[in-house]
Each structure stands twice: as C-alpha cells, then as structure tokens.
Length: 506
Image (cartoon, rainbow, N blue to C red; front, top):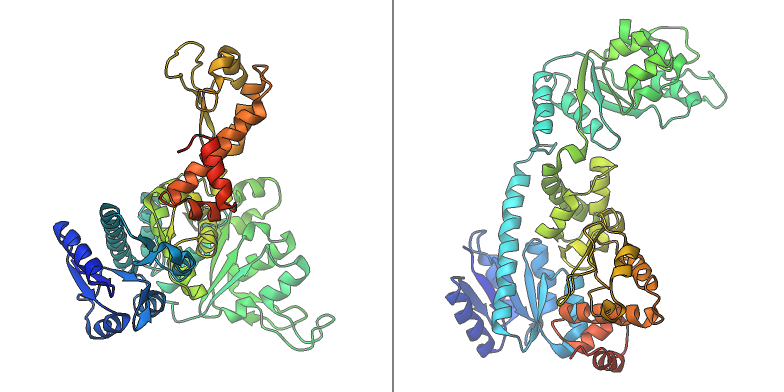
C-alpha cells in the first residue's frame, strides 16, 4: 500500500499521527512544508506517490490551500485532508471549494482523525479500482445480462451490411449502439451520419435527407448535398424513424430498394452506397395498424431488430455509468472529478430513471456543479431523485405504552384518535415515523394527526420538534461546534445558544 503523506511544521502533530497510523498498519511519510512535498512528487514514481495527503493549512514556506491546488493539477483524484484551527473556518470553506476531501479541525480527537483518514484511504482505493475498470471499458458500458446480449448482437453484426432496427425508450442510448455497429463494421473508415427525423420540420426534412438543387425553392442559392450523399460509403442513422412523414416514407423505401434518389428540384438520379440503421421508441407494428407507417417500409427496415433495455432493467450498471459520467462531466467543466458514496449510489440505483441513461448523465452534470463537497452523499442528490423515494408512514409504540398503535400504512387520523393527548408530545412525531426524503408529506401527516386530537398547541409542538431536529443535525454535521452550526443554519451564535437551552438540548 502507498504511504499517507503528512505535511505539518509542528513536529508533535507529525509524531502523533505517524504513531497512530502505524498502529493501524498504515505506512506514512512526513514533510515539514509544501516545498518538500512538491519536490517529492516530482521524484516519485506512480507506485511511490501518496495514497492520501494530510496537510496543515498554515506553514512557513507556503499554505495548505496552495499545496492543494498544485497537487490536484498533478494528481486530480488524490484525496486531500486539510488540518485547520477553528479560527480558520473561512479557509476550511476555501479548502472544500478547492477540492479537499475533508478538513480536520485542530485540536483534533485522535481516534476521529484516524477514522477520517481510514475513510479517505478506502475511498482512494475504491476510486483506483473504478479507474482501472473505466480504463479497460469499451465505448459502451454495461455488465447487466440485457446489455451483454446487445454487445453479443453487435459482435455478430460487425461484418454484416444488413439493415438494423434499434428499439428502446428515449434516452436509452440507441445512437451509441448505431455508432458501435458502424465502428465495428467494414464501413468503419467511411462517414457516420445521424439525423433525428422527429427534430426537423416536415418541410425541411426532405431537403435534409436528399439534398436540393440550386433554385429548387426560395432561399436555395446553391446546390446542397443531403444526408444520404454525405453518408456515401458509410452509415446513415435515422433516429425516431416512426415520426417520419408518410409521403417521405415512400421516397425512403425507394432508396432502400435500389440505392437511387433525386435531390429536391433535381432531374438526375443520384446513386448512393449507404448502410441504414434506424431507431425508434414507438411501437411500429401499432403504427402500421393505425395507418401511420408504411408496412412495406417497416419490413424493409426491420431485417434485424435490436432491443435496447431501459436503465431500470439494468440497475446493476448504474454504479459504473455514474462514475463514468462524473469523470466525463468533470473533464468537460475543467474541474476535479467528484466521488460518490456507496449510500448515495444505492439510493440512485433505486430511482426509476424515466429518461434512462441520458437522465443519469444529466444528473451527474448537476452533481458536478451543485454537490457542495467532493464526496457526494445521499442528501446531495437532485430533488427529482429524493422526491421520488416512497413516503412510508408507520405507527410507533411509545416507550411505556402499546395501546392505541395501528399497523403499518395506518391512516394518520385513526392513529391520532387512539393516542392519548398527554402522550402525543412524548411520542416521536406523535407516534409516526417517516422514512422518506419527502419530509413535507410527513409533516402534513403529522399535523393532521395532532389536529385530529383537538389540541390547541400544535404550532408550538411542531415548531419545537422542527427546531430541535434542525439544530441537532447541524451540530452533528459540525461535530458539536456551535458557532459553525449557527453559521451554516444562517442564525446568530446567541440564537443557537438560547435555542439549545430552551429546547433542553444540552
């Protein structure tokens, strides 16, 4: 295992961390200032570099934030823990913005510091494994059996010129499959031209596909080659073929039959050698029955059909795809790639993804910009993911009572009618637990339950519980530091002190 690099001008800090980490079986290497670290990085091979870097923020000869910036240029995936005095809270915020894994306030509790370092080591090792997998991954990703069937089909079709119809929901990656079919075919050196027939107005689609002669219509100042000519010798991908206007379907059928077509306004036939791959999210058989799609064209296109599974049918691929898209998004934006915790991945994998892989890619772009720290936790996931989690309302028995408790999924008003008024405030949320990110629904059900009892202090009861939970959560987030918790909540330090006393949170 690679060593943990410790950077601090205080010898006692270095000594304490070295001994504690060695007891944990974690090798270390210590430095007194950032210059030594940067020099060691220049000389170190890939195997000799740090597993993680733990650095003080204020040192003679350079700051930890400057070191963080320079290290991330050379090792963008390296977890960096910044040690900072409590008075350096603004610097700690800057550390997070600079891509730090976590910050460690001084004076620190040694067991907690070791726990944090070990967590960073585990995250680093997990990222190394993921990067190795990504490096060996093909242009399409998927370990699910349904995707393996698609890969096998691409392999079988690699040397064939046959027309292929790709079906699947919007956003499932149909164009990627078409590109893979082209890349692994004898036409790989030819052009790959894609056109979404649903995205182009009907009046322009004919010209887009077949081109036009000069003067064919108003604005046609020059002759223009259409997509069929542009794709000559290669592959033409017709996406959303089910939306093609009926009269153009006839022209397409003619091209597929003999390889000849006429430009708009033209009188000479043009010969083209194109392999056509079509795709649709619609049920073409039903479109044929409804008279919206030509049956002969359907049979001409539907020689080989490839069905692409929806993302909800291949949930085991969410892990790999998420890491891939986070790295891809970070590269596009020119920032460090964020990591995602196992808990967040687990929650993400249970999302239904109505927009399929495209929606997951958009979520990863959102997380790259909006997630507050380098490690994405469940609370950082976008609203559409959090709000989609089911709200489970269940009765909870009081510590000293078992009467009046309804089974799971009981109606809140029925529960409230059975809970004595004297016990209502002692129960956690008046006898209800809400296992859901959609806390507003839980609050509404709780309010209904209390109001149904005829109480006249519902506002005070719920406000106290809300404030208590909010302050406790903030204190947990800041490891008990009140001033920092107040700053994060947006209230004054006197306010949080008074609330802690009023709510008996001491």
